[in-house]
Image (cartoon, rainbow over all chains, first blue to last red; front, side, top):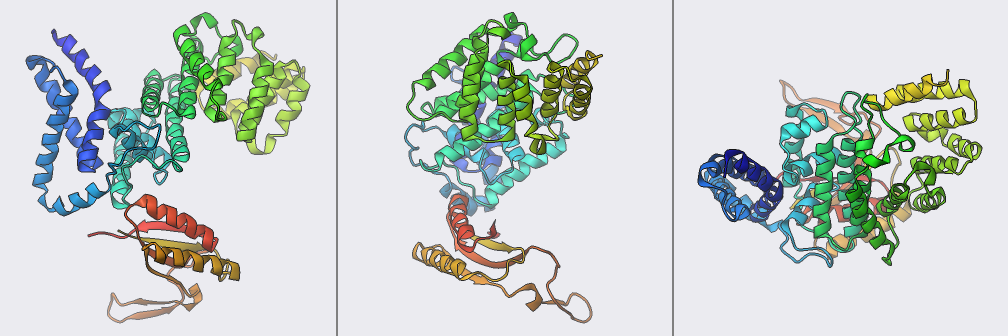
Length: 409
Length: 109
């Protein structure tokens, strides 16, 4: 193997094996710090040795063995930990998982990293480090936080897990839905941060983050194959990611759905997303939030042209979503669909009912601006665009809104 | 491992009789299931006295050590194997005493 081949192989092994190695060590030593450090050292050793020794036939096994050795060495050096070690081991739940969940150390690790007692930003950072294998520097860059601050965030999260005794277990059947929901929220947050970064100075699309979110959601799906919401979130991500290439113009402006060049959409991702949505449609349990959102995206991606979109189906799906999640943002998105049924007046009235909760949400003002423009109320439309531009988080979005506003003149 | 469940009160006053009933039932469950270590309601902030004997002479002050709207009205000390169990109990406790609660582990070393 040439050197670049070995490097590629190591990168691939890292992607495929990091989570398994960390999870196996977490199981053995019930300590995330020990697990992370030992895994990192094992991979570093691989980078040193494999170019000359060759990639071993069972890379995962090699790495786990190497990491375990290092972990034992470290624990021997810190001999006073022996008592604590037994205590920590008691927190590791070896009991078989709930029905429908595959008995996998990575599943325990995901639920631990996404525990509700940890702040959302800590869950995100910990999940990306322990399961995603991203470096602290990479995670810091993704969320525009200083590397030292991100390191602290992860350290504190691990310390809390230890001090408060957050257990390493797959939640029991009655807790599972709420806990899975928590994990999905973390993964969705990572995806959204990658799909439309909230900071004005970052690129609108961050393919590394969306890819990571999809990868982890795929992993979750292999571990919880019967969970409808996991399948729903995966479908939602795939159908959204499929449109990524058409979403930002060459000039760095956000291209709305109505104007996107659909030939740039990824047909394979769309096909996979549609398959997942169709499968869930035949399931007996009522669809959750992500499944409905996925279905909405499936309707959009089934249309060859914006004008052929089945808006009636979309409004019907938003009606279902509102019953589950009566939030103003869902109501706003429903109103946008209603407007497309050639009822801008009705839609505007519905949108304006949401003024109080959504006054500081740029999409509220952008939607109003768009509807006012359709109703030829130019002055008011301009004012609404101004409000939206002021609140827009990302420069690609702001650029698009600015152009639409200037078109009014 | 032991956890402190602090009851956070913001001038809601003493527990109502309904709340007391629920708290009693909760306490009985804690005892029956082996989680009970200790529990109690504290006197209101005005009943407190602060002593600072770090210097030459002890300084005695009337009143709580910090004037704040929210204060710890009472607490449970429970024994639980992990945070999931502690949180489940604290969830029931919050409902029983009809107030927010804080769950914090005791130091183990």
